[in-house]
Length: 173
Image (cartoon, rainbow, N blue to C red):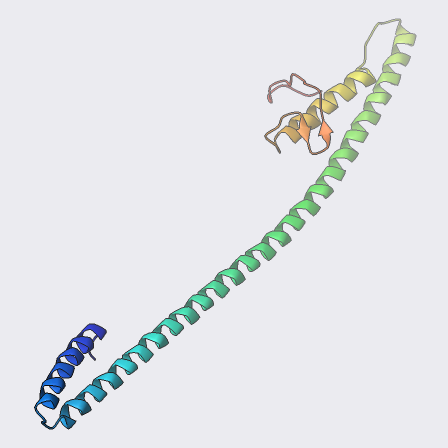
């Protein structure tokens, strides 16, 4: 099949030839038939190009739909994974709080026990005060929360005063 430029060039030549023949009262039917055939070929070429454009548009639409579907699936997968992680975090947090509460209970019992021992022996043993217990616990929780954000001392609505946290290798108790 010829290109648009080739057809246009041939048509220009044929129109010129037909003009010369017609000006000399010669038969122009063969040239007119060829001109008609080339116009038909030109129309067919335009139809093919339009079909290709439409096909490309449809393919682009399919690709776009596939991308949208893939992203929606990724979002759905991420939502499921996020909800699962949140549920696991909540369960672990509840366990951590229960363990921290148990730690506080044991420390309160230790304070009472040390007090009784001091009364019986006259010794001056000391126990971790409730204030110090809370301070150490808050430092532990703050250190963990600081790993979640780029704003140390803040997590959502929670704001903590500036604390000098011990290095991770030091014991919290």
